[in-house]
Length: 419
Image 1 (cartoon, rainbow, N blue to C red):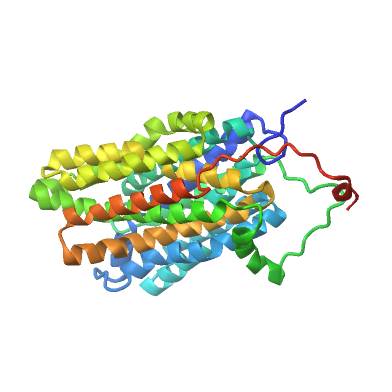
Image 2: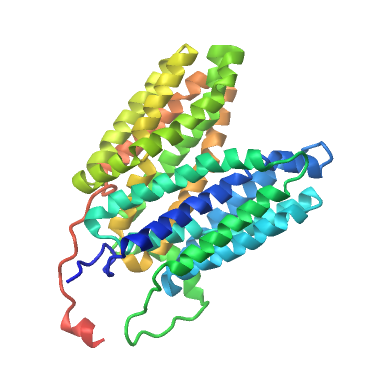
């Protein structure tokens, strides 16, 4: 007899798991493919002048995605994550195919808004896979998805730069559209989700859909959900603060040579995640998320202090490398913690909320870093990271965030069967 998975469904075969993982890699690569050339595209449409359009064009996709992700997740809980993957892959393919047709910055802005509305492929893939793997392999599986996302984020910008020819950006977006079309085909390969026998098909839209994300925060069975989301917010703010201040700190301590090393420093995080992700996943399955999160936040706060104390280019790089090794899989740990705090039936909504909170942290973090630089040096501002991670440590230690709940073993009551 096949052992039930974490979501109460029959575990998938290895090819189905690999199909979702590879689709996640392709989706991440397609998303990051246009990052290096987007400012160049804006300048091209503005006839050499970036002007005030660059910030809105880059940021609007994240803002719109943060707003709509919980509601895409709620729809996924109604109609299945597989259907949401197909929806997102189709919509993003069309948006990428149309992007080279933009002739003004305003038309590119509109297409970036549509890209935000079309989002949701990776959260749906994560929620779907979390429901179809055994509980004892959930950490390793989420780490595998993390490797796929990070590999795509590392490969995408490099490939996008190579595909750019002069002032033509058609090939970049054609490849991005082709990658998302391949994601659509891989989603077709994923086993179809089935409704319970006798279950009615839910309506496509009603007023309860808008309330479902809020109800997930207040539901009785999600006692650990809100603390975990608070930790996600604090941790994503800390990560954003480091990303903003690190190049400034390198320039402050190393001058021109420090500036040249900023790109190399950022690649450290991705490489550290690729090399250590599976090991973190195995530790998660063995020790649980609470123990690891307490250790990770303690180590992250300590390495942030070391980063603050560094006074040469190479000591800054060494402290940042330590920071990356300790914290590279923290969001995977938090994803596992969320999956274990909520029922499989609302997991799409929960992961949508998780994405929204992460993007909110990525917006608030740079703002906080900007204020810090206004009143003190970039090196001193790095201490904000230590304070934010210390806050994550306190929340984890004093609440149910990170707890590994006991598996549900009770059988349904006769009354519930009759209903």
